[in-house]
Length: 106
Image (tube, rainbow, N blue to C red; front, side):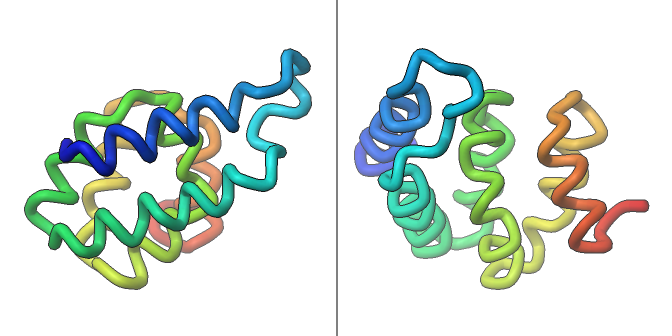
């Protein structure tokens, strides 16, 4: 992961967890902005590098970028298989729901 992505994920984590209330996780307005910046950086890296990075993300990091998974797949269709593989190997509830919503899995 490059320095820019490391900083963006650190920022996203900070915004994501800014409230001590579990019901408010991810509700900070900068969460969406930062997730889009992460998406743009992943797309700029190309599929091979983005694929490697996506597979190395923690479950929490995947959850934190769920809002941009559809856009990532739209811009790099090959990542649909990556997200599907991650979903099969791990138990990330929001990823499973997003992939169902997008019609990638049943």
